[in-house]
Image (cartoon, rainbow, N blue to C red):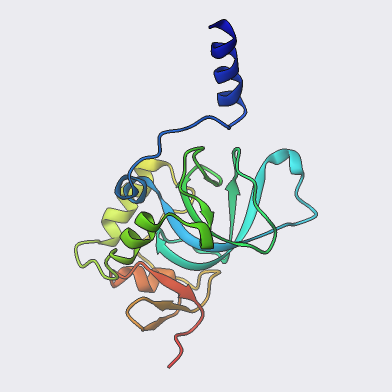
Length: 186
């Protein structure tokens, strides 16, 4: 019995325990950023910092004003140049991935989660910049939308409505939240 307790404690400390994943709907609701992104390495980042860099491809949820995001990877391992479905919470400086997250390579992503993401609305007329500011302040986000748009680091984005925007701020002001980087292809 004592061995069993020790073994399960060791597993949980090493990130190998069976964790109870939330439902796909709860994971979507509780994530601040849901996106497909490609992992890459930067030789100037100290491996001891336990962070991973990603280049965004498609954002399902969450606005971020840069093409590259920094994620505190916890116990996850990422392969350079592989595309992942990321589900992350906003931390003060980085995004972080929960140990029981649905984050995985895109080709191995949970089918229930993918189905739920495809049902997310492209446009939400009830979402206002004021609501986003309030939520950002409550969660302690580092980047808080201000209501005034400026050229963000992302540059042009193609909203899920097929319209090209000068940046995520312009797009979000119209209530559109899903996008790919670059201008829409006509």
